[in-house]
Amino acid sequence: QTGSSAADSANGYVGALLTQLQCPVSADSTSCAANMLYTGWSSVTDAKGNAYWDFGDSYQLPGLLLNGTVFRDSDGDGQMDSINNP
Image 1 (cartoon, rainbow, N blue to C red):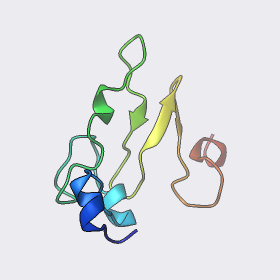
Image 2 (cartoon, rainbow, N blue to C red; image 1 turned 180 degrees about the vertical axis):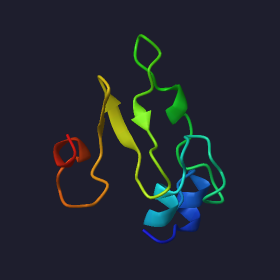
Image 3 (cartoon, rainbow, N blue to C red; image 1 turned 90 degrees about the vertical axis):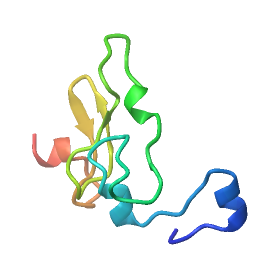
Protein backbone atom coordinates (compact mmCIF):
# COMPACT_ATOMS: atom_id res chain seq x y z
CA GLN A 1 0.00 0.00 0.00
CA THR A 2 1.39 3.40 -0.90
CA GLY A 3 -1.23 5.56 0.76
CA SER A 4 -4.27 5.54 2.95
CA SER A 5 -7.72 7.03 2.75
CA ALA A 6 -9.01 9.71 5.10
CA ALA A 7 -11.17 7.06 6.80
CA ASP A 8 -8.15 4.82 7.39
CA SER A 9 -6.13 7.72 8.78
CA ALA A 10 -8.98 8.68 11.12
CA ASN A 11 -8.94 5.11 12.48
CA GLY A 12 -5.19 5.23 13.09
CA TYR A 13 -4.21 3.28 9.97
CA VAL A 14 -1.61 4.71 7.60
CA GLY A 15 -0.06 3.52 4.38
CA ALA A 16 3.67 2.81 4.33
CA LEU A 17 6.19 1.91 1.66
CA LEU A 18 8.35 -1.19 2.05
CA THR A 19 11.40 1.04 2.56
CA GLN A 20 9.58 2.81 5.40
CA LEU A 21 8.69 -0.52 7.02
CA GLN A 22 12.31 -1.69 6.76
CA CYS A 23 13.96 1.52 7.93
CA PRO A 24 13.22 1.55 11.70
CA VAL A 25 15.88 -0.18 13.79
CA SER A 26 13.73 0.10 16.93
CA ALA A 27 10.02 -0.10 17.65
CA ASP A 28 9.74 3.51 18.72
CA SER A 29 11.62 5.09 15.80
CA THR A 30 10.03 8.08 14.06
CA SER A 31 12.97 8.90 11.78
CA CYS A 32 11.73 6.81 8.84
CA ALA A 33 8.08 7.83 8.51
CA ALA A 34 5.79 10.58 9.72
CA ASN A 35 4.10 8.10 12.06
CA MET A 36 5.54 5.58 14.49
CA LEU A 37 5.02 2.32 12.61
CA TYR A 38 5.60 -0.25 15.35
CA THR A 39 3.97 1.38 18.36
CA GLY A 40 4.08 -0.83 21.44
CA TRP A 41 6.16 -3.57 19.86
CA SER A 42 9.09 -2.93 22.20
CA SER A 43 6.93 -3.80 25.20
CA VAL A 44 5.96 -7.23 23.85
CA THR A 45 8.22 -9.62 25.77
CA ASP A 46 8.27 -13.15 27.11
CA ALA A 47 8.16 -14.05 30.82
CA LYS A 48 11.92 -13.40 31.12
CA GLY A 49 11.65 -9.93 29.55
CA ASN A 50 13.15 -10.92 26.20
CA ALA A 51 11.76 -9.01 23.23
CA TYR A 52 9.75 -10.93 20.64
CA TRP A 53 10.75 -8.57 17.81
CA ASP A 54 14.18 -7.99 16.31
CA PHE A 55 14.47 -4.93 14.08
CA GLY A 56 17.79 -5.83 12.49
CA ASP A 57 19.20 -3.14 10.24
CA SER A 58 17.50 -0.48 8.13
CA TYR A 59 17.18 -2.86 5.15
CA GLN A 60 15.24 -5.59 6.99
CA LEU A 61 11.66 -5.99 8.11
CA PRO A 62 11.19 -6.80 11.80
CA GLY A 63 11.76 -10.47 12.55
CA LEU A 64 10.15 -12.66 15.18
CA LEU A 65 12.71 -13.58 17.86
CA LEU A 66 12.07 -16.93 19.57
CA ASN A 67 14.55 -18.86 21.71
CA GLY A 68 17.47 -16.84 20.33
CA THR A 69 16.55 -17.37 16.67
CA VAL A 70 15.33 -14.53 14.47
CA PHE A 71 12.71 -15.62 11.95
CA ARG A 72 13.10 -13.28 8.99
CA ASP A 73 13.62 -13.57 5.22
CA SER A 74 15.95 -10.63 4.54
CA ASP A 75 16.74 -11.49 0.93
CA GLY A 76 13.19 -12.39 -0.12
CA ASP A 77 14.08 -15.86 -1.40
CA GLY A 78 11.30 -17.56 0.57
CA GLN A 79 13.65 -19.10 3.15
CA MET A 80 14.28 -17.84 6.64
CA ASP A 81 17.70 -16.32 7.24
CA SER A 82 18.41 -18.99 9.87
CA ILE A 83 18.19 -21.62 7.08
CA ASN A 84 20.28 -19.61 4.59
CA ASN A 85 22.97 -18.77 7.16
CA PRO A 86 22.93 -21.41 9.91
